[in-house]
Length: 344
Ligand SMILES: NC(=O)c1ccc[n+]([C@@H]2O[C@H](COP(=O)([O-])OP(=O)(O)OC[C@H]3O[C@@H](n4cnc5c(N)ncnc54)[C@H](OP(=O)(O)O)[C@@H]3O)[C@@H](O)[C@H]2O)c1
Image (tube, rainbow, N blue to C red; front, side):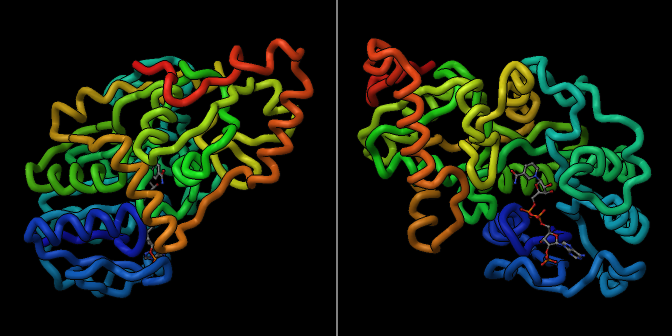
């Protein structure tokens, strides 16, 4: 295939370009080159999609398939106008943040309700309008495309540092502060698995709406598998939502967060999406162990970013937690020693 990636200079776009090249495809990445470099084997074309005629350099090029990772409806509309008629297969990387309902468990891409119609007015997305903007992007593309709504993407080269927190923290060992309960759900996809599926989808001309995410694990199993893979010896001290919120320990990502934690029941459905349609359409996933090991290796060798609680913040939180408990609660009844973590 002659594959055009609108993006390709960081994380997922780069992984798609790298995998497509190893599969023998002719790969072109169009971006500004600000986020990084395209991988070995891919051709780079400088474009600025915020300019009205920003894709003009692609006017004389021929492509069989295209992958767009944009989050800005204006950029997507201009790409559709310039290229949709000329490219046989179109992939748009969207997000599970397009969904309106984060509470209901086991939802599927073909039936879950989307965020509201105000999305159509958005030109440029911000952190606040990200989900609605992705809805607007999807609407601009229309039918006859592969709309891949990615969940949490993790692995080597992750610029967010949020998943990387866990392999890095578990590798340090000792008493580890962990959020919620061992039965809470965690759901993610290794960037390399998602990239492989997106290239496979282009090869097989897959179209439709799919969630691009791996299976749902319990948090207990997630931590146990990562710790096992890293040969880590640690205890897990599970702390509840009220404690985390009282101590300004934040959700999901960023400074002072316990990454990948979302409060329940508000987000009970977020990590439990039914991905059987994706599996039936060719998505395969590697083990958590492999993802954890490779991510730690990358963080160490490349100095990849890690976000979340600092060691001092975690120690202070653990101290406060133990001080807040009756003595009888501070031993094994609330701490899970690894190995021997519940799994499913
Ligand atoms: N990370 C997650 O956990 C997660 C979860 C769900 C969905 N997603 C989705 O997954 C995708 C991730 O994509 P990604 O990792 O490749 O990163 P990204 O941050 O979405 O990359 C954006 C790409 O577009 C290019 N770009 C930005 N502005 C541009 C402009 N004005 N003109 C031309 N190119 C421009 C950037 O390159 P230059 O800056 O070099 O131009 C970069 O290559 C996104 O669609 C995201 O919404 C991510």
